[in-house]
Image (cartoon, rainbow, N blue to C red; front, top):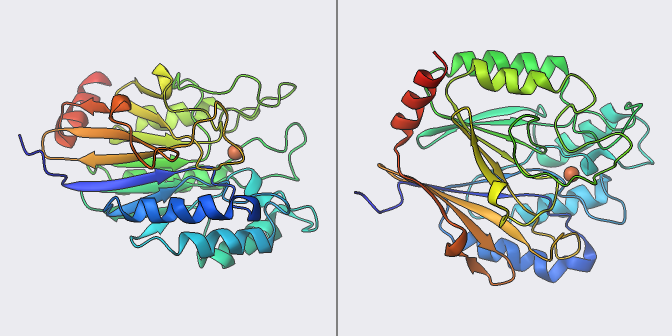
Length: 293
Ligand SMILES: [Fe+2]
């Protein structure tokens, strides 16, 4: 077995960068740089308080993330477009895009052996039930459907701020109880997301954050219908639930894939939380095809 990393990527979520956490935020960037990753996915909610979702906090976050020494890409979470002085969701999204230098909130990128698909929250003020529901429009879902058809055969990693209803991934049950926001499109036909997963048999991984929970929960990684749904914790010293600040480090090797937990307080990988998938990407693709015939 080849035990040398073939392709390593990091996943960080819910950074909520702020003046209060400035020192820890700089340490986070240094620590990620030391991991020798080929790529980093950022799962949104990079804005801290005060002024979350505004130009100042978005600029602060992008400046910090630009300190990463490998290619990285971010997506929009619920807090990233909640800045009250901006009047519309569209204007808030445009500000977020311009600050990042992106053209669209959604994105596909091929890196190493994987295709990465980024899906973004598009609504805050326009919500009538729950402003913090992570919401993908039908336009974005149609784009994802088309893009997934186009990259058929390549193993796909999807990134979105919130998880998929029906994945059985750990979520925080008390999030905004009156109208939930734990899952993507929770109050708007959430079953469309699992339908997307079922129709596209080359989706192998789905990474999400949002709940700020520790990655030590047994169902913080779960294989449902052949897809590994992976919860990513928070890096924030201010917003951590369960006093744990966790991120993901994923090694894709020839014959296996290892999903590690990086503990930001220990400033090291906590190998007691490793998940070893003893299969190649090709094997995982074949298993999904068989399972859904
Ligand atoms: Fe969130």
